[in-house]
Image (cartoon, rainbow, N blue to C red; front, side):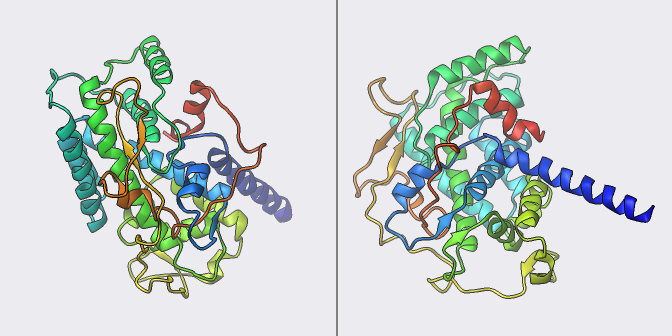
Length: 342
């Protein structure tokens, strides 16, 4: 009888892990694409990012975006700043705000500020629309703004009884502001995860350890839904992880030993790459003939410091096989990403 209960418990645990893993493996948000990251990081030592780790990062960023919006309760950049300070009250959060403020300053130099009439804040509508915007503005992604996808999203939200469409004059600066924050947090994760110079492949286990070790992010990460999903994937790859992990005095899970990064202090050198960066330009501030993400000369400041050396020690990333690259409609994408975890 006891053996039967143990078998059932084992089956339940396996099913639970597979269910959590499915949320990562199914198609979802794409703030970072393997193709564009590989182009930007091609001149760096060959550390490859496994596909499940790439997808895990995208889901992590998706939930992070949702948490900021939920805490902010508004699309104004002042509210977004306050929201970030609530969920990430660390030096990392302050640094991310500084990066976002620089992006915002550059945006207002190109556009005339406009304060729309106060309106009700629709969290889900704003979140899904900003997901599309941030994916397009990300310098680690190779997609442009898709106005047709945004139109379909707005129609779907109206049919679903959405309370209020996000105001266009708030959406562009909010998207630029939030994209800068997402990218800065990503670069911090990459510095920690790429500290082992002897590794040639970074897995989802490396990502989980990096997030658990990072004192500037762990308190937020352990309270996120994606924590359990990444942990489940990590256990599938490293079932005996507990033997190589220890609890630090602050309660964070961390490996018993570490290998220093090639740069000694864990920072990534940004001078060695000659890859041009891309400029985030919203459809509200550019003419229809201008591509959303424009090539920028090396002497221009537009995300030059963020578009290079962003991910896993400026590593190259696994190329997806043809069967891994699948096209999904807007509805499928919405249902397979963070919406499944809300």
